[in-house]
Length: 430
Image (cartoon, rainbow, N blue to C red; front, side):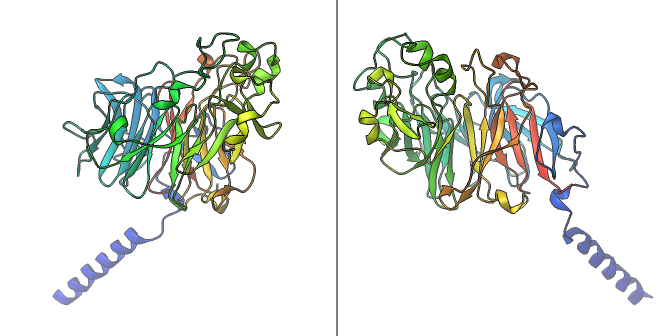
């Protein structure tokens, strides 16, 4: 009798283990609470959406822990916290636990080696992640302090490589380094003094505390107007970024650029970055119709002259003007189909300065890669964030995509800067 019971118990344990380790359907889709309308998004066939959260607060970048916990950088405090932590406790993909923490707001956020890295507009810091809890407790360690305060392009977004380095964007504090900021016909300062501490990417140690830009930072690349979207590509061990191109060619130089040219120029440049590169801001911009860099009007350009623009690095790819790239990631998971492997997803926040034309951007695009370089043209992956095809002002957009992240199962997470809606895009093949 004992032996029969014993064998039954063993068989029960074996069956239980088999049920736990059996291959689930794609991304555990039988358990996920997919939205019937895909959260309002337009997606390629085979993709479905879980709406993780509706109103986290105005969200910037986003990151996901190995256990599925989600951390969201906020631009405004919510419940006395500048960062949101979300957890799904019942496996349906919808966050049912939200905690807010941290004194500072800002854009940058990432996870590495048991730490949550976070940036404000003037510092980079990190929290030890709790073993079981959701939100970190206690005071963070300050990694970099005293970064420039600025009224334009203030976001200190960042990325981490595989060698304990962190790369911090310090945008140019102006449109084009004019003597009189954003004034029609005002020439550019030459040389531009803003490049001393702005307009580039600075490299720091990711583990050393209390670093400063002047004493510890290494200017990794310069001539970059603003790179909110930057990412270290781990598969080839290299930095990439997408720049916010300059504004107001027609508004500032109506005798040289038509209204149409002001809307269509310049390109949003996608850079493959080597240590020491100079990409030419504010002296030049990239004209994707002519497929070349030309001299900026503040420095004598007329839309055709090249001059010193020949000395600067060209982009590896050019996106349309005034789409406002705000985040970049390389897809290194296995859930999505093969065409997406190692390609780049870019979150375009949407323009403000294409008037009187319809505003553009407000989408997630995909750019295929083969090794270090793009292997084809970009395509729209997720659309309809704005809620209309005839948007005249960004203030009328329903949502604006700002951050993208990959979850532990390969899902793609997207954050919105207006209400803080969080989408989880899953490939199910259905």
